[in-house]
Image (cartoon, rainbow, N blue to C red; front, top):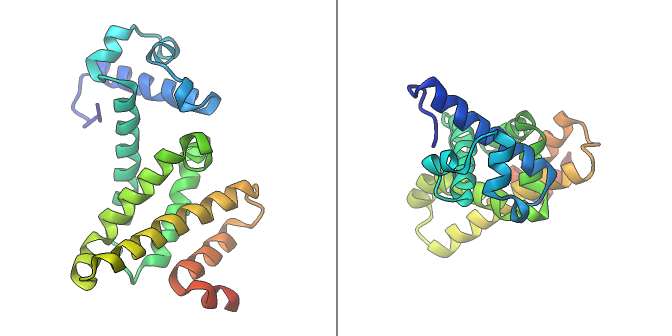
Length: 190
């Protein structure tokens, strides 16, 4: 249940506890090992309460993805594509850092790869959809654009994390932005 702000305080507290318990478990184990029971134990509530809000654990996961996607879209809503691709990339890195260790695990860990890929794919479609509909009449070209944007941005972030973020934040923004906006030729000029 995505909170709108007008819910009863008890409902807000319950949903917040469920979300926090789920995040805590993500940090400790693979998604395949998380159960409704483990979320309920961590959130200190019974399974009936959980099922009042979610039919399955997958529904909770889907909600968390929707929240992250909507937060990022909100942060980038005033950017134009493709003109602001560099800024969108910068915002992606800033957003990713702001979300903390659980988000990093979701985006980078193989056990959660399906979540990170789903998030970036949905973001690319939502942000680039209008541009591609108006400028790329060829569906195959649109598919290539989506594939490039979806895979490149996410993989650059993952590589930076895998390298223990040894490249300074400002520099990784510049390098990844150049790769996304100018390709290899722009990257080699940096």
